[in-house]
Amino acid sequence: MKKLQISLKPGERIYVNGAVLKVDRKVSIEFLNDVTFLLEHHVIQPDDTRTPLRQLYFLVQTTLIDPANAPRARTMFYDAHASLAQSFENPAIRQNLAEVRDFFDRGRLFDALKLLRSLFPIEDAILSQGARTDTTGLTHCEVR
Image (cartoon, rainbow, N blue to C red; front, side, top):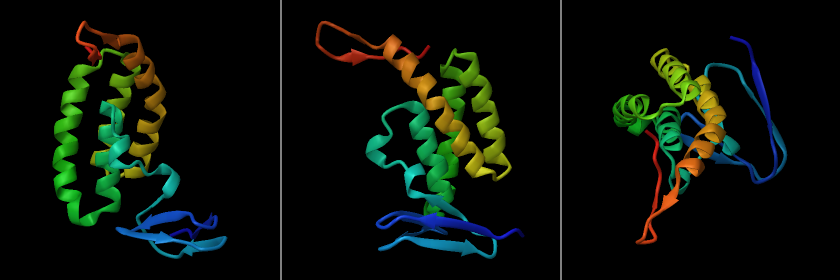
């Protein structure tokens, strides 16, 4: 395996094999073997999962950084993915969702996350176009 070196800034967090590490000063870390990690700026919190693709991202993220909950997150991913694949009409999202599923099935979770992040602007545009307010003041979004 090729060595992997990353640099972290003071106060930055990294999620490594289910553990959250926070550094107090600038540090470089070199991984000498296989490791599952995610940098803090790629982690979304539950409160940030307000859209369908962000919810799917959160499930992939959970599978990656929370080994104790990975089996449940995997099941939820497959259910959510099937629903989303049926819901979106946008060809770019539909095609990329198929690729996200392929990455997920092959254990390439980093690639699945990266691809999902690239879809957020498209999803945001779709949801902002489809958002309307009814007479009760509630906002509704039409995905399909």
